[in-house]
Image (cartoon, rainbow, N blue to C red):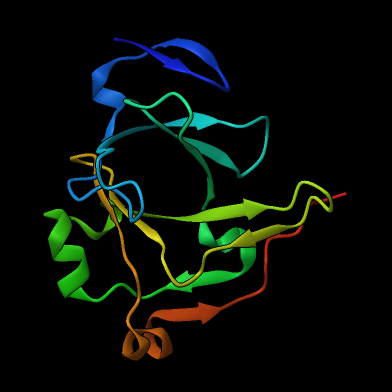
Length: 143
């Protein structure tokens, strides 16, 4: 399937690579299909909307920022997750163009079932924040 994007031009993608957000992403509820695209070399990727050429988010695994999540069963069950190894977690990242500083959106990670390609944005409730987020050492680039 060919999709148009403002950042990457026309892409020819297999629909099996699409990630389905049944409820959309808050603020983009009408956009349900996305694809994960490489962003140079490194841990950051683009989450490109299939049905809107201008919508794409920078994402990365939480361990890049030294963060780990303990996902409660009630949250994982929304993805029809049969094997915990199929759970992938990504953070939306805002990048300040002037300073090039990256800011992860820690309180609203994306949960993805890699087996069935279903995903949603988990907006942590206040009570979940104390038990679901663990701060580790961030990954360091080797010199």
